[in-house]
Image 1 (cartoon, one colour):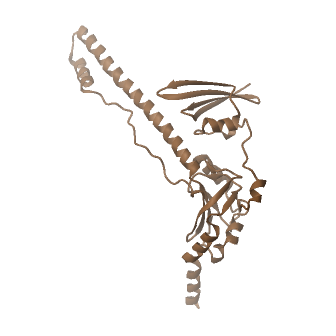
Image 2 (cartoon, rainbow, N blue to C red):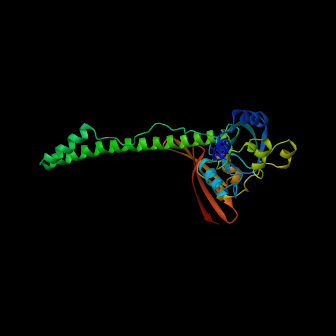
Image 3 (cartoon, rainbow, N blue to C red):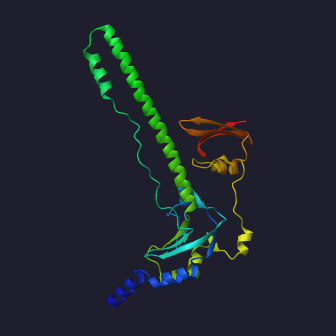
Length: 289
């Protein structure tokens, strides 16, 4: 009896056969889902515990959307592009399944080492006793040091520009790469979970199959105009326009090779000052009206 029970336990916890994944994929891939939560722009996606209580940690979703941005907004329709049945989870990948990499970028050193000329002048300053010669050496040394510091300042500006552009590029990639639902099962995916009915039951309240009619009933919501709580670094100027409305004042300037935009938004009871570098929000402040 123990032997038979052991075999039954192994059969229950073993990975589902590939045929189950293929059947589920044939039934769902290419279909559209209408999502009821903001989907993070990463392969982390949204974790769902069909047998858990609660089955979704909404604070975790909030943390992921803040970290990775929103790839599929609440109320949007996305295509199921891949179904994967793993040992302890079923992946429902949407619009590509989420961004998994990083744009990276080479390290830019912002430190300029002392030149041989600077080192020689420092050495001469220690051994020369004539005050007139000392003044001449000090003047030459200041000139060499100032050139080195200007070069370091230029390199810092280049490094900051590269960082901003990398972040903007990665944010754009995340927004285009979709997301996913991860249906997780602590003791392994049971056989009856790999069906369309079970998957959609697990996603109840989070997403539904879009039959065309439902899409007309639920439109993608926008954050209310003048909502500073929705701001985060990396938003484009156009996205801030949607959140805040048109600015009361807007001016452009150039700094370190970057186009800097300063915008003032008049809100109810407050004024928002926002700064954009190359079209990307980098800082903002609020003041009372």
